[in-house]
Length: 196
Image 1: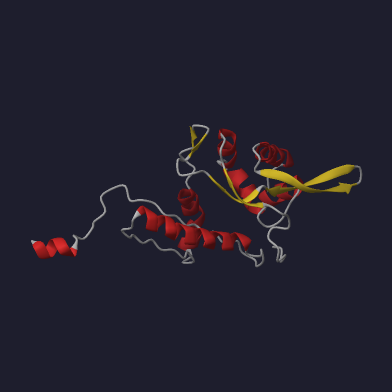
Image 2: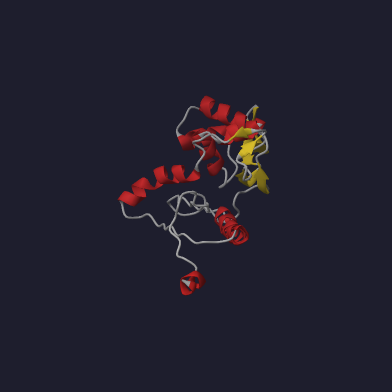
């Protein structure tokens, strides 16, 4: 891992809302999300990315092209190596998101576009080794309070994204806020109890 304190080593926007079906499709592939994750650390060439994910360079070049055409990746610098110009790719933004409607250009996110499902798969080995840190809590809140709370969580997410890439191990960080859509037990209002 790099110990570069500037993460990543190129300029990028803070966040980018996915507004087209092409962008939604581009980010819904597991290999492409892995490539985007690697580019949080620093800009990289197709050759470097292919080596990191242990896939053929042609496969990675295809996926980089899909991300670049969707506006999620861009060439951030070039370097001349012999007679070839080597391109270094970087993310267009630290964070990509689809608004609460979960669709772009009228196209809904694929059903497998669930960060918690991905996190559950990734974290299973850590769970088996007793190295998973996590919790789940429930609270009755107004939509306004939930939005305020998420804003604070969003700041922590951005802090995590900006951490210098160092150390020997990659850590996953999953967080979410969701309304309970089934019947979750709720205590009666104390006022109602006193009146009865």
